[in-house]
Every structure is written in structure tokens, then in C-alpha cells.
Length: 195
Image (cartoon, rainbow, N blue to C red; front, side, top):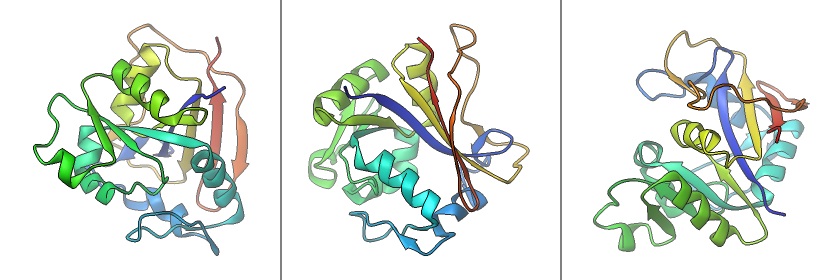
């Protein structure tokens, strides 16, 4: 059965970017090895270690749709309509770009997290849905829509910035014990959500 995952690369102190939306050293693990992980976006090169390749192949190989927020979509310029994970993207936004149909024909724009997860599941079919946005992750966790939380934890302290996790509206959320994969420049953790 298809699952809903979250995945972000995070600093040791919990940030996915600095206050200026820059990832800095967080993405060093994408260039820390000799294994080339193919992706459909010719502007992105993923050259990781064996552990990183295993993690990326598991997450991307089963990903049938990716959910992102509008801020990340804008920062990444819509990934040129070719997200490196190789799956269609569903963007949560209150206002789609005017040129959405011509500039991003494989990207779907929806108003709301529940609608985004629902649409992503339709697109994904038997494959999984991955959420790659801190704000959308937060809302999906509050709505009980996440099956597993994935973190690529990087050995850097930002001190401030954009947090991966924030206050949950429903209070705390208990996760199961993690699956741990030790990589170069990242510790990859997968936590099933306890039901």
C-alpha cells in the first residue's frame, strides 16, 4: 500500500535553511561521494556515497508524486518542471502562477494540504507520496496524513533559520524507532509514525 513520507535535509539543531532561505552546507552530502544517482533534471548532479545512494534510490524509486509548498517551488524555480526525484510535483498555493499550464505542465497547483495529499495519491497510484516542504510537513502531521518522517541529518549547527518541525497543533506526536543509515556528511533517519 502506498505511503506518505516526509523528507528534508536538516541541520543538527533542526533547520532546513538559514534565515535567507539558503541551504549552505546542508546539501554537501549530495556531492560527498563517487556514486552518481541519475535524475531527470540536467541542472542537478547527485554524486553521493553508497549509503546516500541507497537512501535516494529507496525514496525516489518508490515516489509517484512529490508535494511541495509555494515558497520552495519559487526558490527552486519549479525545478524547471523536472524535479530531481523524477515524479510529478503537487504545489500547495492559494494562487497558481498565471503561466502554470505552459511553463509547468507536469506540475499541479492546489489550494490546501489535504487536497494536495489527495491529488498526489491519485497521481502516484501504487507508488508513495513524498512531502518536501517544512510548512506542508507540519500541516500534514497535524492532519494525521503522514506515515513516515525521514530526515537526512547533517553535522552543522545553523543557530537560526527555517525549522523542519515546529509546534504541533494537536500536541506531541510519537514516532516508532528509526531505521538508521550512516552516510558521509549525513545520517539518514526514517521514523514510522505511531498509529
